[in-house]
Length: 259
Image 1 (tube, rainbow, N blue to C red):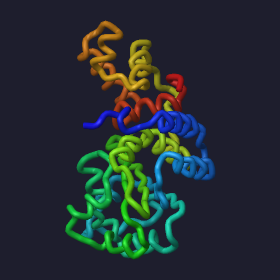
Image 2 (cartoon, rainbow, N blue to C red):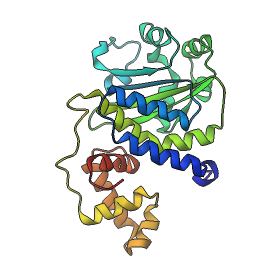
Image 3 (cartoon, rainbow, N blue to C red):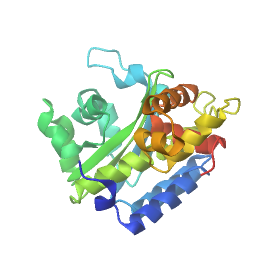
Image 4 (cartoon, rainbow, N blue to C red):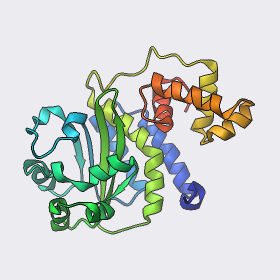
């Protein structure tokens, strides 16, 4: 696996820090829209699409009765007129290989690779009709809350896929938390005001925030790697996070650790 420093420039790193800081300030759809436009400093996308929905909707099949639109939310920016409407009106999302690939790997799903693995080419033909060449879909799934938050970026030309995927892995937790806050729904907007982290958990979170591995943290704190992983699992559980990176994003937004 290629390391981060070989793919991400110093300017990329500065833009990522700036982006994550701005993500914590998002409170409504307009501020989320402004944040997403800043995303273009990092990645060369032409079209953007964010969505939040219950897992039962995401995993619906063609034999499942279509759920009403009120069961999910989406934000569209810069997509060609008509493409999203056709995608949903024809229920193409039920056979879309892209989100299926994302859920299977829990990593950024490249569209061209996903299309090659899919059995139905309806979505591939749709994006080609709108002159979209490639894209990525990524997000976070939270089984405990029964929801999935994700977004898709579409390009009119291919770029450095490895670099794109590394950046997505870093900023996705912050972007997903910002999007959920922008929706304002009671369950989505739940900030962990009453969550308490122990002194040791805060210490470990701060090192995770700096990109340290469990082994590196164990050496720094002079404790076992097993102990670090134990505390990390507790943190993820307390914050209803999907993983340690997501936990950092939540903790920063809730003021449990400093950004």
